[in-house]
Image 1 (spheres, rainbow, N blue to C red):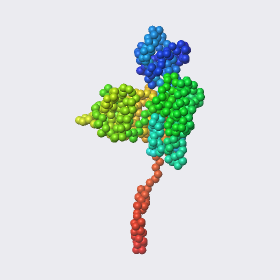
Image 2: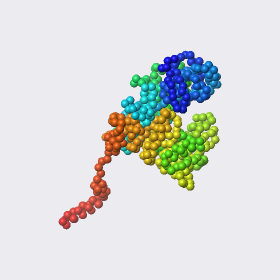
Image 3: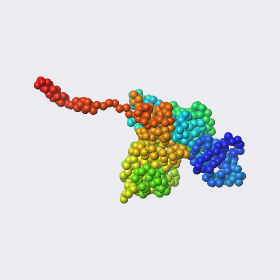
Image 4: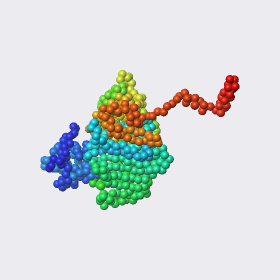
Length: 585
């Protein structure tokens, strides 16, 4: 075996293994034991070239593993143990359908494109592909094949420039794929031109799953919620692309001729496509994930992979979100870490406690619409499992609560109580300042260890001191330094526009033009020196995307307002007084 055929993977918390890239038929003996996806795989990775193997059993350390990527998912070809006894032991373990190792797979966000949506009239793009010319903060990049993707993107702009609309794009895109184009979308076209109401809007997102790059998008006339096109491409490193499927308007979805399906799969797809013909209100990607099952070797797995990324790997946090589903569960076991973390932000909170409440108490604490939405969410989760067992942490604007479900009994509900330094009494979540409540959203991002997540946060610094915002970013980058977690956020906070914190290609601007339409551009186009004080240059207007004030003469405006506010009778009386004074003169 040549050295170039294997790659060493080193991580601080995992053992070191050899990864062998081979299609040797010698290993095919394992395939009979890999059926119906009985081996469970964790959804984590470093890079597609360096697949990390976690030794769950703790005794198969000398394995040379062989893998093959199919549709962005791992498919086991087989393995060969150095020790024959280990090989026999592993064979028996597989026969019992007990997983003894897991593969980790990479999923990341790469690029977004939007047109005729909110304040975006013409096509606007934001990319996470890094610049090869920038050498600073190299650890902010994640390599997939020969492409380097960035972990962070910070977006600046004046009030009403369109920053929030960029964050809303992600919410709209996710809602449209998972639940259909929302009713409120009828008013989401760009309203700066009359013809935009009947003009197509276009949306596209580029992502990676495993070592595959995908571009998925759709077009629609939003005012009528009419889908006019949909497409999914696999992108290649040389700049070429292969269309996996596409549809035009109400026409039948078409699969790429180069995709070879089994007779069973072909018949199923033909049925799905025929049934979908004439549909102008739904997305075909959604339909292909509505109760559809795919084998581990299916050539149609890209439908599941892309849908799964959009549904489960984008987390959007906006100031007006009525109900936030947090990742990190607050219980007695996690409070120790939470209490240590909250003290670092100097909020005066010395301890966070858990207190059980009833569903009625929770209902009284929440607006009816929010409570109903929360209970529907719990019901949906329960229906997904025959024997429901899950925990979830959620918060509304003024209430923070945990819900634990075991079987079909009534959910157990708990909330948090906060104790402040030198205080005789505990405080409820609703008694805290908006900034402190905001911190719990951000702490969830710090505590969450689930990788392959894109956080989209609108106004990250809202209600926070500039130093606290900077501290949060430092902790986020520190805690997730070796994890595949991406953060895209909008902000006005110029103090963090620092090349020691962010790379030039991670800083973006949104600005409205003379036609009142938003455009997006990167700081990297200005080619600034590495020692440039960016925040000062930004506030001086070098990069645009700041408010431009017109002159205002208060005294003159007041007198004009007084004149305009006069009634016709007032005007006649004034005219008579002026005429009389002139006669006296």
